[in-house]
Length: 256
Ligand SMILES: Nc1ncnc2c1ncn2[C@@H]1O[C@H](COP(=O)(O)OP(=O)(O)O)[C@@H](O)[C@H]1O
Ligand SMILES: [Mg+2]
Image (cartoon, rainbow, N blue to C red; front, side, top):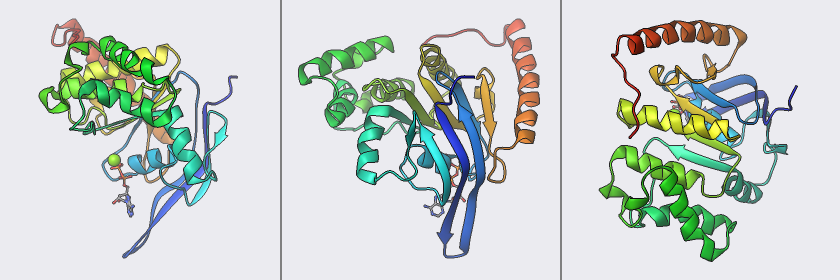
């Protein structure tokens, strides 16, 4: 068996609120391997963003262990984690979070400047290459507000890839996109996973996850065997429906 790239053990997160302790994550155990494309689904408020914040070291768990790429991040100092995150994780958000005053290419260069991975004179050409890979090199010198939502999300993905991180994490990255752009974003992620990047996408969009090989469902603060089985059964049913839709020509393969 290959060793896990991400190992989560007995992860618990409780927030202190004025109304008392809120037990959001109640003991999560999961393993994800290099090159896996995993999605985590669950209703709004179920703790998906909380989970990602633990995984990326943005917030600390109440108890439990997380290892990413052999690095134990649960007890690492915040200053170390910031640097580690910049080099090892590309994060894609629902509202893209591009810097509005920078051009598209400058947005993609920003993580390279921050992590100081590439030589300064290589950064612009690398950013342009990434934009080209997503078919938007011709938008490089515009500001983000001049682009469509789908294009902005492709910039955000290019930016997430800037430092060639082994892990890409998305928090509802298609939540603000139309169906076709969302499908295309998922296709990009699939291609990245095939090339060996590990991808974890959080979503509450059940329709978009039909083609994703690994589906985890967060229910009542845990990801259990039963929810996995239920999710797998539902996925089989959803795939059937999708095949019928393709067969009847209701859906067509598209590229932006
Ligand atoms: N910093 C925080 N302090 C207190 N409660 C929080 C905090 N962050 C999130 N929560 C609560 O934890 C629960 C899970 O939130 P979240 O992880 O954002 O869910 P999701 O991303 O699945 O919608 C929600 O009830 C939310 O209100
Ligand atoms: Mg969320």
